[in-house]
Length: 391
Image (cartoon, rainbow, N blue to C red; front, top):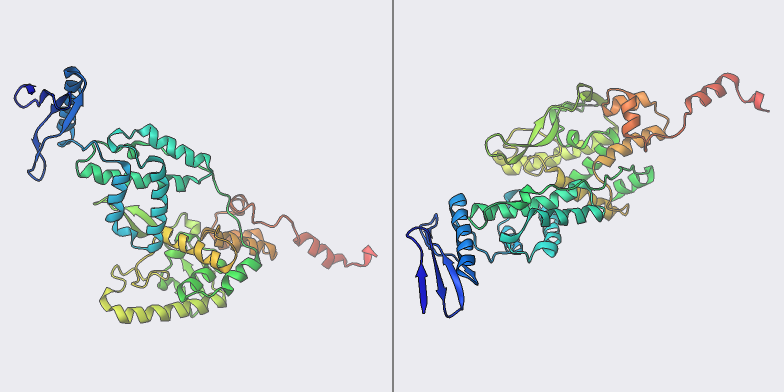
């Protein structure tokens, strides 16, 4: 026997003898016009009524009642089944799948409706304790935030606790510089036209990663052998959609605007890259460089490349070359400074080459790469007084 009680429009509470439990049920039409009748259960009518009140409050707030049996693992499955369009790079997709497995191992079995901000933050704290960098921790947080946002959009959850979480500060990795031998090993590796040009220009010109990816052909002067650094590539939120897009933006400081002499090897690899791009432009026609950016280090369609994709593949080619996979594109710039310093180039000249306001900044930022010796004075003394007095 089933007995019911309740008032019209407020849901109903009834005893279900077959289950031996009190049941609270509410009925409503979802966005598709389908009748939904979610239920809650309690040992007493009062417990069932309290849970029913929670359903009514959720319905009033969100316009839907989220299913209570969906887990964090389920929303990740949905995300992987229909990944965002910006995951088009196989490397990006694989990297995100790996991070999702980390989150899934810790939180995958948790019911989405019961997931708390504290659980998410404890997981992130564990990553920090394991020595992960701040950027890596934030990327681990972004994936459940994206997956739960989709569930929130589809009425499967009332709020996004991952978005409310506060990721901790992780370890701060100290950038290193390749030795001249490691740099030669990298360049001796079998690389395609793009990556050879990217590695050579990064090592020999000392541009920031954003400056390198934002370099335009109009700023490469083959006739006079110079490169004008005028723009950098940045990932910024679109004003209309809020989604991050790649744009050519102004440089970090006025001193960053500089013209550097182009080494002969850089000129050679850039000429090869320009020929390669000409072939792709001929093949794609109007579909090539649709934004008219004219950038040097774009993809095969002339579009800018996402920095994280470049970083991940750069680490892969470093690993293949035999120098290890810990290197990042920024460390090409560190290597540039280190090689110049070891070669005896004056710190003021290095500061000008990398676009710093003064040499103090260069010494601070690249303190691990600046040679810990001063040779100018000794060289001058030997030239003036000779070696006779030493005998």
